Length: 514
Image (cartoon, rainbow, N blue to C red; front, side, top):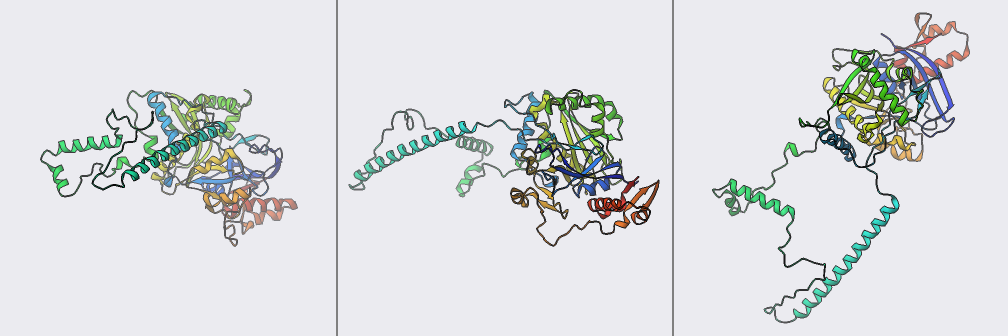
């Protein structure tokens, strides 16, 4: 089994969906008739990405919005505060049917679509913007802050005056003999200070401690508690943190058990989309209807645009060959749909590829009626947890690829919040922690992340004559093929292809020449 690709070359000067430039985008592409998961893994590690069967690579130093491949480390991932809010929001909805009171905006996915050379457009990857409650407007926020500061200053002045008056009285009365100490009570102003007619207020913490002491004394009727005190020791009122008190893991937050009377039931099913499994075929129409509603409501597509054929071409068809090696994950490698079933109906679908080293996120679409659940963020966290689950089955699968990170596009920067994560250097194809890249990206859209000026692309094409060509139903090295070609542009095209895919892929994949 070998990959068969048809290189389409450079396409420049077309519309960019990220910055809305009419002719700023530039990329190279190829049509993949078939592709092994090993070859695609190597290609995405060189900055390529698929959309349907069209595989493209942005020309990073030319395109208006450089797209850097980003990967997350699921095994080291810790959900942030905002991630936990989304998971808790889902849990409350499932248990009690609670809907967040905040006006949660829809989470727009990546509306930019990669134009294929055939004239069709191809869906790129998902964009989920973290959906938190709306914050106060800037003007209102500033005015509230200034009011608080004024009150604090006034309170401090009054407190300092009372303190000075109290000290002055004590100094005057304290000039006599020490044995004649006089206590002076300064009467608080109306509305200030404690109400002496009522018992002193106790902190909740102190009340809890007292209850704990009483409980321990009841459990130690033989005077064990007193014996501790006699020895100058105090029994620990708060035992050392047990495992249950440790921060909850991602799995604990996602898979928390629900009560029997829970309002809703959520189930996530992984079905193979290419070749389509029986489960995929059985749910195709329902899944398509969710996609159609998503495109019409979220992306404002006219009803005749999200057709069945378009949906099939770009979210169901895949060049990846299904593989089920004995040492691989139970579900095998290839392309899948991760379906989110709520109370027996599909509300969202995550399109993913399972590769030798990673779970690669392709796209997400969902029922707009459930936007309040922040399904973009929720699905990303579920996919990270899924990658961790697959790692248990095959240790080499340990990454989660989130597509492209675009620092110059505000709506695409959210991917940097899933830490730890790396960005791919566009020149040497080594992974660099995102923290080391951000300062450079603030100064320039295009950056070489590898700080070693002597470093080069180790996987570059060094022997293009060894590149494999599929010509007239025969497979041959490029060195043999080019002897029969008289077109001077042919060599330039093949050399460009070889430099982009690298030596290893050029020797394994078959370059179709007509």
